[in-house]
Image 1: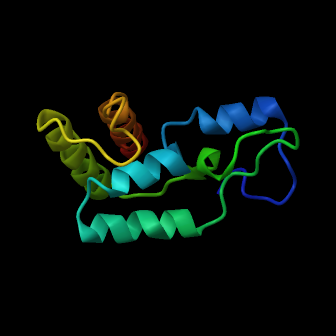
Image 2: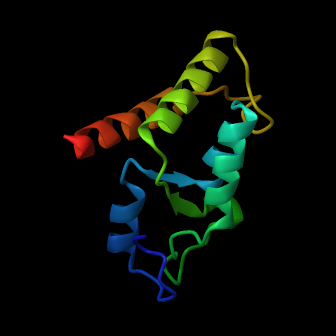
Length: 121
């Protein structure tokens, strides 16, 4: 797992890791959990139980800004993407998205799915 060492990263390295399609924030994962079935919720809980990417020493974000490198399967990502698309189509929101909606969720999970597809070639 990249960035999970105990030594704080510099901002350039941290940003590079966080910009990878398989890296999601604690906040995004917590909101996604509200949209998925119990098997996927359990898998996301496993991710959230792991150590997040180590933040730069001067990072000011709290726990919700923790970033996690995901190692989900293509089937899991596809199922999450389907749940997110269904929620968006139904106008569903989560506890953290009531005011803003699920903007960006489809894009984030689609980007991760495409990333996995490229890696499997």
